[in-house]
Every structure is written in C-alpha cells, then in structure tokens.
Length: 148
Image 1 (tube, helix red, strand yellow):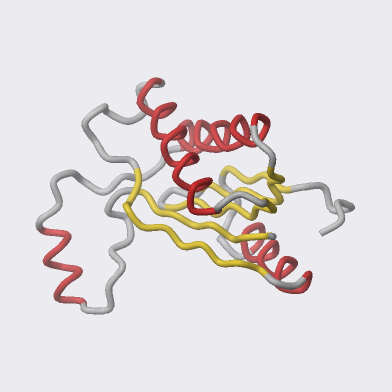
Image 2 (cartoon, rainbow, N blue to C red):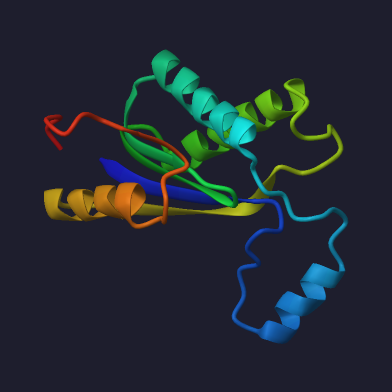
C-alpha cells in the first residue's frame, strides 16, 4: 500500500478553523514556532533515509520544508508508526547536531496519513510532493523510470 504522510514542525500550523482559537493557542505557546533551516532539513532527510535503509519499505518521495515534511511511501507497516519513528529519529538527530535545543519541541503532535488506492492517485501525490510545494528545499524522489 502507498501512503502520503505529512507532519508539521512545532507550532507552525495550528489545525483549527476558528481564527480566535488559533490566536489564543499562539499566545499560549510554551516555545516559539520551529522553522527548519537548511542544515536541519538535511538532517531530517538523512534520518528518514537511514530508517528506510534498515526497514522494509520503499520511499517514493520526501520533501522537507521549513514548516513541514511530506513523505510518499510504499509499505506494509502501519504508516502511523512509521511517521512516529521518522519524527523521533529526526528530532534526535536535530538535537544531537545542536540545531534544536534539547528542551524545544521539534514536531507537532498531529500528522496526516492518506492512503493512495490507485496508480493515478500515487502519480498525483508524487507531483504534489515534488512540484507543488514551491521552490524545492530538501527534496528526494525515486528516478523517473521507477515503476509506481
């Protein structure tokens, strides 16, 4: 099965429709919102790749942005557990490299996992991750001739 997994940095996206609630939550943050600088984005991408080499799943695309990460993955594992592992491993790498203070949260608690049921939906997700995020930041994708 193939999934599009997305998660955000701490306090960069407040998932709510009410502007008043968003403003209230922003004024009550314990830490400032986290933006990933280029070195931090490279560390996140490296952590995801390292995990992929040691486990049984196929990365199709990864795009690490300033405020969020998109991963297109084909796997048999629970994608929610994969996301939890990616978040934990990348947070550890960011702290060990000194890019994020030990006390500062790295990731928001929530994530979005969408199962892609057709080749067409996988191709659309690949296009979204690779081409629809603005200028590429830390981007990796399978070669164009890879069978989806």
